[in-house]
Amino acid sequence: MAVLSAGGCHSAAPPAQVERWADAWIMALNSHQLAYFDPLFGPPGTYEDPVTKEPVSGARLGFYLSGQWRRFPKLRYEQGRVTGDRNTVVVEWLATGFTDDPQAKPVPGVFVLALQGEAITSVRAYFDSCAVLPTAR
Image 1 (tube, one colour):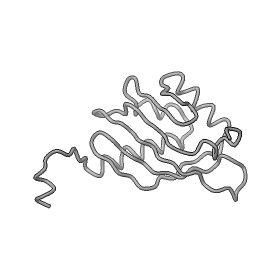
Image 2 (cartoon, rainbow, N blue to C red):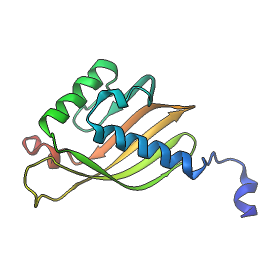
Image 3 (cartoon, one colour):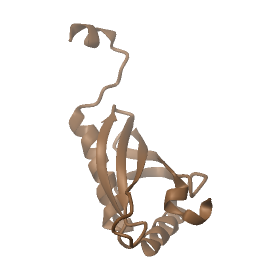
């Protein structure tokens, strides 16, 4: 333990903070309500995934999320392993609801949340867009 603390070069966050950010992000997504995102993002607060192909924020992010929830009204994220520190939270997840087929396999992915103080500055999502949008093949 002394060896780990002697380095002093890491910015480890208390595990509760990392879990709190992961829980808040997954809860906001599963709420299907934009109001849950406002308290999480700091300006400019961007989101990017394989579908957006570039960072989006503000009204564009709202339009993107609202469209996703309309297209996939049963979309749900199940939080998996969470790691991170004061500046970054990595959330592994499985998503269901991209299809009405109850036998469909969940889509795996990862969210990487960049933090500054008490706000998210950016979120990058990594997943196979072909599993989500079959027409993207």
